[in-house]
Every structure is written in structure tokens, then in C-alpha cells.
Length: 82
Length: 82
Image 1 (spheres, each protein chain N blue to C red):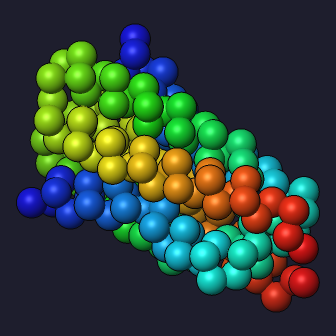
Image 2 (image 1 turned 180 degrees about the horizontal axis):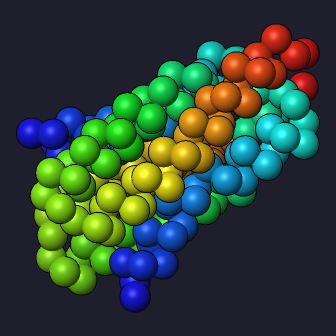
Image 3 (image 1 turned 90 degrees about the horizontal axis):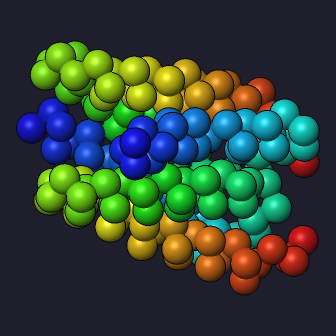
């Protein structure tokens, strides 16, 4: 239960940031290194989950990966906006 | 090994963002809801780690929590900067 709530909060952790970027179309203060580092880390977590066949790790990180791809796509789209 | 690299990348994931805030003193594009949601989630992960007595979960989330407290502190400090 504790673990489930924790997992839900962190796996959707980037959703508020994505909504803010949609609204403001501005990404000047966001670190692309942070996004790429989380992308790499979450991708490796996903591989690790597949390796040890743990469905919770697979699901949580697959969802995070989708939010990170979305955030990185928006960053690229709006990176030249002032 | 795969899991260790994954854990290192994600547990220090907010460090590049913290360094960027230090450099620019600007947080206008950062979602405070994202930071607070990760803070709550990582705090619950820490409690979960203590509950199931898993040292890896405890250590990873304790470190993340320190980076999140730093990021939230910097957000509060610079939130009125243009």
C-alpha cells in the first residue's frame, strides 16, 4: 500500500512539469541534462525489471519513460522560445 | 550491475537541475508541483524501504530526498526572480 502510493507519485512525477510546459511553452529554466539523465536511468531500470522479471519495476518505469519522452519532445519543440 | 547504474542515474537525477538553478538563479519554468510530488513520493519510498528493511531503497531515496529538499529550497529562494 505504502509502496503503491509511493510508486504512483514518482512514476507520474513529471506530469505536472509537462502540463506546465504545455501551458507556458517555455523551457528555458529546465535542465535538459536532468531529463536525459532520468531518461537513461529509467531506461536501465526498465531493462533491469525485464532482466529480473519484476512486473512492478517494468510497469512503473515504462510509464515514466513515456512521460520523459514527452517532456524531452516538448523541450526540443520549445527550446528556442523566449 | 544494471540495477546499480540505473539507481545511480535516477537518484542523482535532480543534480543537473540544481546546478542549472545555481547558475541562472531562475526557476520560472520549473513546476513546483513536480518537485513537491517527487518529494512526497520519494519520502513514501523511504518509509517503504524502512518498513521492508531494504537498504538499497533506503539509501537511494534518502539521497533523492536531499536533492529534492535542495531543489525546493532554491525554488523558494529564486521564485520571484525574473
